[in-house]
Image (cartoon, rainbow, N blue to C red; front, side, top):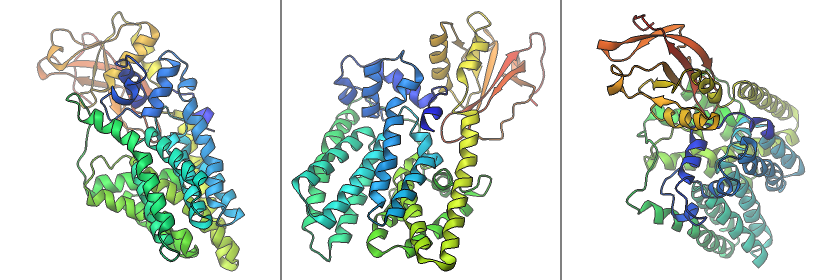
Length: 454
Protein backbone atom coordinates (compact mmCIF):
# COMPACT_ATOMS: atom_id res chain seq x y z
CA UNK A 1 0.00 0.00 0.00
CA UNK A 2 2.82 2.40 0.83
CA UNK A 3 4.86 1.49 -2.24
CA UNK A 4 1.86 2.18 -4.44
CA UNK A 5 1.26 5.51 -2.71
CA UNK A 6 4.90 6.49 -3.26
CA UNK A 7 4.64 6.56 -7.07
CA UNK A 8 2.99 9.94 -7.66
CA UNK A 9 4.58 13.38 -8.11
CA UNK A 10 6.66 15.05 -5.44
CA UNK A 11 4.75 17.91 -3.87
CA UNK A 12 5.84 21.29 -2.51
CA UNK A 13 7.35 20.31 0.86
CA UNK A 14 9.34 17.41 -0.61
CA UNK A 15 10.65 19.68 -3.38
CA UNK A 16 11.40 22.31 -0.76
CA UNK A 17 13.72 19.86 0.98
CA UNK A 18 15.56 19.20 -2.29
CA UNK A 19 15.89 22.94 -2.75
CA UNK A 20 17.38 23.30 0.75
CA UNK A 21 19.87 20.54 0.02
CA UNK A 22 21.31 22.60 -2.82
CA UNK A 23 22.92 24.69 -0.05
CA UNK A 24 24.63 21.67 1.53
CA UNK A 25 28.39 21.64 0.91
CA UNK A 26 29.00 18.59 3.11
CA UNK A 27 27.09 15.91 4.97
CA UNK A 28 27.50 17.91 8.19
CA UNK A 29 25.39 20.72 6.69
CA UNK A 30 22.35 18.45 6.90
CA UNK A 31 22.67 18.67 10.68
CA UNK A 32 23.78 22.26 11.23
CA UNK A 33 23.95 24.08 7.90
CA UNK A 34 20.35 24.10 6.60
CA UNK A 35 18.70 26.78 8.68
CA UNK A 36 15.06 26.02 7.98
CA UNK A 37 12.28 24.28 9.90
CA UNK A 38 11.50 22.11 6.85
CA UNK A 39 14.83 20.32 7.31
CA UNK A 40 13.80 16.93 8.68
CA UNK A 41 17.35 15.79 9.32
CA UNK A 42 17.14 12.00 8.81
CA UNK A 43 15.09 12.44 5.64
CA UNK A 44 17.42 15.16 4.35
CA UNK A 45 20.40 12.87 4.96
CA UNK A 46 18.75 10.14 2.89
CA UNK A 47 17.95 12.52 0.02
CA UNK A 48 21.48 13.90 0.04
CA UNK A 49 22.87 10.35 -0.03
CA UNK A 50 20.86 9.26 -3.10
CA UNK A 51 21.07 12.60 -4.91
CA UNK A 52 18.46 15.00 -6.35
CA UNK A 53 18.08 13.06 -9.62
CA UNK A 54 17.09 9.77 -7.99
CA UNK A 55 13.70 8.27 -8.95
CA UNK A 56 10.78 9.46 -6.86
CA UNK A 57 10.15 5.96 -5.53
CA UNK A 58 13.74 5.83 -4.25
CA UNK A 59 13.42 9.26 -2.61
CA UNK A 60 10.43 7.92 -0.72
CA UNK A 61 11.86 4.48 -0.02
CA UNK A 62 13.11 5.37 3.48
CA UNK A 63 9.61 6.53 4.43
CA UNK A 64 8.09 3.36 2.94
CA UNK A 65 10.47 1.17 4.94
CA UNK A 66 9.95 3.06 8.21
CA UNK A 67 6.19 3.25 7.65
CA UNK A 68 6.02 -0.48 7.00
CA UNK A 69 8.12 -1.30 10.06
CA UNK A 70 5.67 0.74 12.15
CA UNK A 71 3.10 -2.02 11.58
CA UNK A 72 4.94 -4.77 13.55
CA UNK A 73 6.11 -2.10 16.02
CA UNK A 74 2.47 -1.24 16.72
CA UNK A 75 1.66 -4.93 17.12
CA UNK A 76 4.47 -5.36 19.63
CA UNK A 77 3.41 -2.24 21.57
CA UNK A 78 -0.22 -3.34 21.89
CA UNK A 79 0.42 -7.03 22.44
CA UNK A 80 1.00 -6.39 26.12
CA UNK A 81 -2.72 -5.72 26.33
CA UNK A 82 -3.51 -9.04 24.61
CA UNK A 83 -2.61 -10.89 21.41
CA UNK A 84 -5.81 -9.74 19.70
CA UNK A 85 -4.96 -6.11 20.47
CA UNK A 86 -1.56 -6.61 18.84
CA UNK A 87 -3.15 -8.00 15.68
CA UNK A 88 -5.69 -5.18 15.56
CA UNK A 89 -2.97 -2.58 16.08
CA UNK A 90 -1.03 -4.05 13.16
CA UNK A 91 -4.17 -3.89 11.03
CA UNK A 92 -5.04 -0.31 12.00
CA UNK A 93 -1.53 1.00 11.36
CA UNK A 94 -1.30 -0.95 8.10
CA UNK A 95 -4.58 0.30 6.66
CA UNK A 96 -5.13 3.73 8.24
CA UNK A 97 -4.97 6.42 5.57
CA UNK A 98 -3.02 8.77 7.88
CA UNK A 99 -0.17 6.29 8.29
CA UNK A 100 -0.20 5.10 4.68
CA UNK A 101 0.03 8.69 3.47
CA UNK A 102 2.91 9.79 5.67
CA UNK A 103 4.50 6.35 5.33
CA UNK A 104 4.96 7.07 1.62
CA UNK A 105 6.16 10.69 1.62
CA UNK A 106 9.79 11.85 1.54
CA UNK A 107 9.69 13.65 4.86
CA UNK A 108 10.47 12.75 8.47
CA UNK A 109 7.09 11.64 9.78
CA UNK A 110 7.29 7.90 8.99
CA UNK A 111 10.56 7.51 10.89
CA UNK A 112 9.11 9.42 13.83
CA UNK A 113 6.02 7.16 13.89
CA UNK A 114 8.26 4.10 14.06
CA UNK A 115 10.38 5.65 16.80
CA UNK A 116 7.35 6.58 18.95
CA UNK A 117 5.93 3.06 18.74
CA UNK A 118 9.28 1.43 19.50
CA UNK A 119 9.90 3.80 22.41
CA UNK A 120 6.41 3.10 23.78
CA UNK A 121 7.15 -0.63 23.70
CA UNK A 122 10.48 -0.14 25.47
CA UNK A 123 8.91 2.06 28.15
CA UNK A 124 6.31 -0.66 28.76
CA UNK A 125 9.11 -3.23 29.15
CA UNK A 126 10.97 -1.01 31.61
CA UNK A 127 7.87 -0.40 33.70
CA UNK A 128 6.93 -4.09 33.82
CA UNK A 129 10.30 -5.85 33.80
CA UNK A 130 12.77 -3.28 35.09
CA UNK A 131 15.30 -0.79 33.72
CA UNK A 132 18.11 -2.96 32.37
CA UNK A 133 21.04 -1.42 30.52
CA UNK A 134 19.88 -2.99 27.25
CA UNK A 135 16.40 -1.50 27.56
CA UNK A 136 17.69 1.95 28.44
CA UNK A 137 20.09 1.89 25.49
CA UNK A 138 17.25 0.81 23.21
CA UNK A 139 15.12 3.68 24.54
CA UNK A 140 17.94 6.16 23.94
CA UNK A 141 18.46 4.90 20.39
CA UNK A 142 14.78 5.11 19.44
CA UNK A 143 14.27 8.57 20.93
CA UNK A 144 17.50 9.90 19.42
CA UNK A 145 16.57 8.54 15.99
CA UNK A 146 12.98 9.80 16.20
CA UNK A 147 14.06 13.31 17.18
CA UNK A 148 16.38 13.49 14.17
CA UNK A 149 13.44 12.36 12.01
CA UNK A 150 11.16 15.13 13.28
CA UNK A 151 11.18 17.39 16.32
CA UNK A 152 7.56 16.50 17.12
CA UNK A 153 9.23 13.50 18.74
CA UNK A 154 9.97 15.83 21.66
CA UNK A 155 6.30 16.06 22.64
CA UNK A 156 5.85 12.32 22.17
CA UNK A 157 8.86 11.75 24.42
CA UNK A 158 7.37 14.04 27.04
CA UNK A 159 4.12 12.04 26.84
CA UNK A 160 6.05 8.80 27.35
CA UNK A 161 7.92 10.22 30.35
CA UNK A 162 4.64 11.42 31.90
CA UNK A 163 3.14 7.99 31.20
CA UNK A 164 6.02 6.35 33.07
CA UNK A 165 5.56 8.70 36.05
CA UNK A 166 1.82 8.01 36.28
CA UNK A 167 2.26 4.27 35.82
CA UNK A 168 5.20 3.90 38.21
CA UNK A 169 4.00 5.95 41.16
CA UNK A 170 2.57 2.91 42.96
CA UNK A 171 5.73 0.84 42.48
CA UNK A 172 8.25 3.60 43.06
CA UNK A 173 9.60 6.18 40.65
CA UNK A 174 13.01 4.60 40.03
CA UNK A 175 12.09 3.34 36.56
CA UNK A 176 10.36 6.58 35.64
CA UNK A 177 13.38 8.63 36.70
CA UNK A 178 15.66 6.43 34.57
CA UNK A 179 13.30 6.83 31.61
CA UNK A 180 13.20 10.61 32.05
CA UNK A 181 16.99 10.96 32.26
CA UNK A 182 17.62 8.76 29.24
CA UNK A 183 14.87 10.46 27.24
CA UNK A 184 16.26 13.91 27.99
CA UNK A 185 19.83 12.98 27.09
CA UNK A 186 18.76 11.18 23.91
CA UNK A 187 16.82 14.25 22.72
CA UNK A 188 19.78 16.62 23.16
CA UNK A 189 21.73 15.94 19.93
CA UNK A 190 18.84 16.75 17.58
CA UNK A 191 17.67 19.63 19.77
CA UNK A 192 21.20 21.00 19.81
CA UNK A 193 21.37 20.95 16.00
CA UNK A 194 18.01 22.70 15.79
CA UNK A 195 18.94 25.39 18.31
CA UNK A 196 22.25 25.97 16.50
CA UNK A 197 20.35 26.54 13.25
CA UNK A 198 17.56 28.56 14.87
CA UNK A 199 20.10 31.03 16.28
CA UNK A 200 21.55 31.67 12.83
CA UNK A 201 20.54 35.05 11.34
CA UNK A 202 19.27 33.39 8.15
CA UNK A 203 16.99 30.85 9.91
CA UNK A 204 13.62 30.57 8.19
CA UNK A 205 10.26 29.06 9.02
CA UNK A 206 7.32 28.34 6.78
CA UNK A 207 4.13 30.36 6.82
CA UNK A 208 2.56 30.53 10.29
CA UNK A 209 -1.19 30.83 10.83
CA UNK A 210 -2.27 32.11 14.28
CA UNK A 211 -4.26 29.74 16.45
CA UNK A 212 -8.05 30.05 16.35
CA UNK A 213 -10.90 27.67 17.22
CA UNK A 214 -11.54 27.06 13.52
CA UNK A 215 -7.87 26.32 12.80
CA UNK A 216 -7.63 23.93 15.76
CA UNK A 217 -10.86 22.13 14.82
CA UNK A 218 -9.65 21.73 11.22
CA UNK A 219 -6.36 20.15 12.26
CA UNK A 220 -7.57 17.75 14.95
CA UNK A 221 -10.71 16.76 13.04
CA UNK A 222 -8.59 16.21 9.93
CA UNK A 223 -6.29 13.97 11.95
CA UNK A 224 -9.25 11.93 13.26
CA UNK A 225 -10.72 11.59 9.76
CA UNK A 226 -7.45 10.40 8.26
CA UNK A 227 -6.62 8.05 11.15
CA UNK A 228 -9.92 6.26 11.74
CA UNK A 229 -11.94 7.08 8.63
CA UNK A 230 -14.41 9.57 10.06
CA UNK A 231 -16.57 10.81 7.17
CA UNK A 232 -15.71 13.76 4.99
CA UNK A 233 -18.28 16.44 4.48
CA UNK A 234 -19.18 16.53 8.19
CA UNK A 235 -18.50 19.70 10.16
CA UNK A 236 -15.08 19.75 11.85
CA UNK A 237 -16.53 20.47 15.28
CA UNK A 238 -18.95 17.54 14.92
CA UNK A 239 -16.06 15.23 13.99
CA UNK A 240 -14.10 16.55 16.97
CA UNK A 241 -17.02 15.78 19.30
CA UNK A 242 -17.54 12.30 17.84
CA UNK A 243 -13.84 11.47 18.10
CA UNK A 244 -13.70 12.67 21.71
CA UNK A 245 -16.75 10.61 22.70
CA UNK A 246 -15.36 7.55 20.93
CA UNK A 247 -12.00 7.96 22.66
CA UNK A 248 -13.63 8.31 26.07
CA UNK A 249 -15.73 5.20 25.48
CA UNK A 250 -12.73 3.15 24.39
CA UNK A 251 -10.65 4.41 27.31
CA UNK A 252 -13.36 3.19 29.69
CA UNK A 253 -13.06 -0.31 28.19
CA UNK A 254 -9.32 -0.55 28.91
CA UNK A 255 -7.57 -1.50 32.14
CA UNK A 256 -6.15 1.48 34.00
CA UNK A 257 -2.50 0.94 33.03
CA UNK A 258 -3.35 0.87 29.30
CA UNK A 259 -5.26 4.16 29.41
CA UNK A 260 -2.43 6.46 30.35
CA UNK A 261 -0.46 7.02 27.13
CA UNK A 262 -3.51 7.13 24.80
CA UNK A 263 -5.27 9.59 27.12
CA UNK A 264 -2.22 11.88 27.26
CA UNK A 265 -1.68 11.67 23.49
CA UNK A 266 -5.30 12.09 22.40
CA UNK A 267 -6.46 14.67 24.93
CA UNK A 268 -3.45 16.11 26.72
CA UNK A 269 -1.24 17.07 23.79
CA UNK A 270 -3.91 18.89 21.72
CA UNK A 271 -4.90 20.83 24.85
CA UNK A 272 -1.24 21.67 25.39
CA UNK A 273 -1.12 23.04 21.83
CA UNK A 274 -4.05 25.30 22.70
CA UNK A 275 -2.50 26.42 25.98
CA UNK A 276 0.77 27.26 24.21
CA UNK A 277 -1.13 28.98 21.36
CA UNK A 278 0.96 27.11 18.80
CA UNK A 279 0.45 28.37 15.23
CA UNK A 280 -0.53 26.40 12.10
CA UNK A 281 -2.61 23.83 13.95
CA UNK A 282 -4.74 23.31 10.83
CA UNK A 283 -2.33 20.64 9.58
CA UNK A 284 -3.28 17.11 10.74
CA UNK A 285 0.40 16.07 10.68
CA UNK A 286 1.07 18.49 13.56
CA UNK A 287 -1.09 16.16 15.67
CA UNK A 288 0.87 13.00 14.82
CA UNK A 289 1.30 11.81 18.41
CA UNK A 290 -2.45 12.16 18.94
CA UNK A 291 -2.99 10.07 15.78
CA UNK A 292 -0.76 7.32 17.17
CA UNK A 293 -2.58 7.42 20.50
CA UNK A 294 -5.97 7.29 18.76
CA UNK A 295 -4.94 4.33 16.58
CA UNK A 296 -3.57 2.39 19.57
CA UNK A 297 -6.72 3.21 21.50
CA UNK A 298 -8.93 1.97 18.66
CA UNK A 299 -7.05 -1.33 18.47
CA UNK A 300 -6.82 -2.04 22.19
CA UNK A 301 -10.28 -0.66 22.96
CA UNK A 302 -11.99 -2.77 20.30
CA UNK A 303 -10.09 -5.85 21.46
CA UNK A 304 -11.27 -5.20 25.02
CA UNK A 305 -14.86 -4.72 23.89
CA UNK A 306 -14.77 -7.92 21.86
CA UNK A 307 -13.43 -9.91 24.82
CA UNK A 308 -16.20 -8.50 27.03
CA UNK A 309 -18.79 -10.32 24.90
CA UNK A 310 -22.54 -9.64 24.54
CA UNK A 311 -23.44 -6.31 22.93
CA UNK A 312 -19.89 -5.03 23.39
CA UNK A 313 -18.65 -7.60 20.89
CA UNK A 314 -21.10 -6.27 18.32
CA UNK A 315 -20.00 -2.71 19.11
CA UNK A 316 -16.36 -3.67 18.43
CA UNK A 317 -17.30 -5.23 15.09
CA UNK A 318 -19.32 -2.18 14.07
CA UNK A 319 -16.53 0.21 15.04
CA UNK A 320 -13.87 -1.76 13.18
CA UNK A 321 -16.09 -2.02 10.13
CA UNK A 322 -16.58 1.75 10.20
CA UNK A 323 -12.84 2.34 10.45
CA UNK A 324 -12.19 0.00 7.51
CA UNK A 325 -14.88 1.53 5.30
CA UNK A 326 -13.90 5.13 6.06
CA UNK A 327 -10.18 4.58 5.53
CA UNK A 328 -10.83 2.57 2.35
CA UNK A 329 -12.81 5.46 0.85
CA UNK A 330 -10.06 7.96 1.67
CA UNK A 331 -7.35 5.64 0.35
CA UNK A 332 -9.32 5.13 -2.86
CA UNK A 333 -9.44 8.89 -3.45
CA UNK A 334 -5.77 9.24 -2.58
CA UNK A 335 -4.72 6.46 -4.93
CA UNK A 336 -6.86 7.99 -7.68
CA UNK A 337 -5.68 11.60 -7.42
CA UNK A 338 -2.45 11.46 -5.39
CA UNK A 339 -0.69 14.57 -4.15
CA UNK A 340 -1.19 16.38 -7.45
CA UNK A 341 -0.12 16.06 -11.09
CA UNK A 342 2.36 18.85 -11.52
CA UNK A 343 4.58 17.31 -14.19
CA UNK A 344 1.59 16.86 -16.52
CA UNK A 345 0.72 20.55 -16.16
CA UNK A 346 4.29 21.72 -16.77
CA UNK A 347 4.52 19.42 -19.78
CA UNK A 348 1.60 21.31 -21.34
CA UNK A 349 3.25 24.63 -20.49
CA UNK A 350 6.41 23.43 -22.25
CA UNK A 351 4.53 23.55 -25.56
CA UNK A 352 5.16 27.30 -25.65
CA UNK A 353 8.70 28.80 -25.78
CA UNK A 354 9.88 29.96 -22.35
CA UNK A 355 6.36 29.24 -21.02
CA UNK A 356 5.74 32.61 -19.30
CA UNK A 357 3.18 31.97 -16.60
CA UNK A 358 1.50 33.57 -13.62
CA UNK A 359 0.12 32.03 -10.46
CA UNK A 360 -3.05 33.23 -8.80
CA UNK A 361 -1.58 35.60 -6.30
CA UNK A 362 -2.50 33.65 -3.15
CA UNK A 363 -0.07 30.79 -3.88
CA UNK A 364 3.31 32.22 -4.84
CA UNK A 365 5.21 29.17 -3.53
CA UNK A 366 3.87 27.25 -6.55
CA UNK A 367 6.76 28.74 -8.52
CA UNK A 368 9.17 26.40 -6.75
CA UNK A 369 7.15 23.38 -7.92
CA UNK A 370 6.97 24.66 -11.51
CA UNK A 371 10.73 25.33 -11.50
CA UNK A 372 11.47 21.80 -10.26
CA UNK A 373 9.43 20.07 -12.96
CA UNK A 374 10.61 22.46 -15.68
CA UNK A 375 14.19 21.61 -14.76
CA UNK A 376 13.34 17.91 -14.71
CA UNK A 377 11.80 18.14 -18.20
CA UNK A 378 14.64 20.29 -19.51
CA UNK A 379 12.43 23.25 -20.39
CA UNK A 380 12.16 26.89 -19.32
CA UNK A 381 9.19 28.22 -17.36
CA UNK A 382 9.33 31.94 -16.62
CA UNK A 383 7.18 33.38 -13.82
CA UNK A 384 5.55 36.74 -14.51
CA UNK A 385 5.27 39.01 -11.47
CA UNK A 386 2.12 41.13 -11.03
CA UNK A 387 4.09 44.31 -11.75
CA UNK A 388 5.29 42.86 -15.06
CA UNK A 389 1.92 41.62 -16.25
CA UNK A 390 1.03 44.51 -18.59
CA UNK A 391 4.47 44.71 -20.22
CA UNK A 392 4.97 40.92 -20.50
CA UNK A 393 1.59 39.21 -20.19
CA UNK A 394 1.74 35.54 -19.20
CA UNK A 395 0.77 32.83 -21.64
CA UNK A 396 -0.39 30.50 -18.84
CA UNK A 397 -2.25 31.01 -15.58
CA UNK A 398 -2.08 28.49 -12.74
CA UNK A 399 -4.95 28.53 -10.25
CA UNK A 400 -4.09 26.65 -7.06
CA UNK A 401 -6.53 25.07 -4.61
CA UNK A 402 -6.25 22.82 -1.57
CA UNK A 403 -6.81 19.06 -2.04
CA UNK A 404 -10.42 17.90 -2.13
CA UNK A 405 -11.65 21.50 -2.29
CA UNK A 406 -14.54 22.56 -4.48
CA UNK A 407 -12.17 24.12 -6.99
CA UNK A 408 -13.61 26.57 -9.48
CA UNK A 409 -12.03 25.13 -12.61
CA UNK A 410 -14.27 27.07 -14.97
CA UNK A 411 -13.79 26.73 -18.71
CA UNK A 412 -12.95 30.42 -19.04
CA UNK A 413 -11.74 33.12 -16.68
CA UNK A 414 -9.98 36.47 -16.74
CA UNK A 415 -7.10 37.63 -14.60
CA UNK A 416 -4.51 40.35 -14.25
CA UNK A 417 -4.40 44.05 -13.35
CA UNK A 418 -7.56 45.96 -14.21
CA UNK A 419 -6.02 47.98 -17.06
CA UNK A 420 -4.62 44.92 -18.87
CA UNK A 421 -6.77 41.96 -17.91
CA UNK A 422 -6.52 38.95 -20.15
CA UNK A 423 -8.93 36.15 -20.92
CA UNK A 424 -7.81 32.55 -20.37
CA UNK A 425 -9.22 29.21 -21.49
CA UNK A 426 -8.77 26.06 -19.44
CA UNK A 427 -6.19 23.54 -20.66
CA UNK A 428 -6.46 21.06 -17.84
CA UNK A 429 -7.56 20.35 -14.29
CA UNK A 430 -5.14 18.37 -12.11
CA UNK A 431 -6.80 17.29 -8.84
CA UNK A 432 -5.19 16.23 -5.58
CA UNK A 433 -6.63 14.36 -2.62
CA UNK A 434 -5.81 14.05 1.03
CA UNK A 435 -3.26 15.40 3.44
CA UNK A 436 -0.64 16.83 1.04
CA UNK A 437 -0.40 18.61 -2.25
CA UNK A 438 -2.47 21.07 -4.24
CA UNK A 439 -5.03 20.91 -7.03
CA UNK A 440 -3.99 22.88 -10.11
CA UNK A 441 -6.10 24.32 -12.89
CA UNK A 442 -4.04 25.37 -15.90
CA UNK A 443 -5.30 28.12 -18.24
CA UNK A 444 -3.83 29.37 -21.49
CA UNK A 445 -4.28 32.95 -22.68
CA UNK A 446 -6.90 33.41 -25.38
CA UNK A 447 -5.10 36.07 -27.46
CA UNK A 448 -7.26 38.96 -28.50
CA UNK A 449 -10.05 38.12 -26.07
CA UNK A 450 -10.98 39.96 -22.88
CA UNK A 451 -13.67 39.27 -20.39
CA UNK A 452 -14.58 39.13 -16.74
CA UNK A 453 -13.93 36.22 -14.46
CA UNK A 454 -16.67 33.66 -14.25
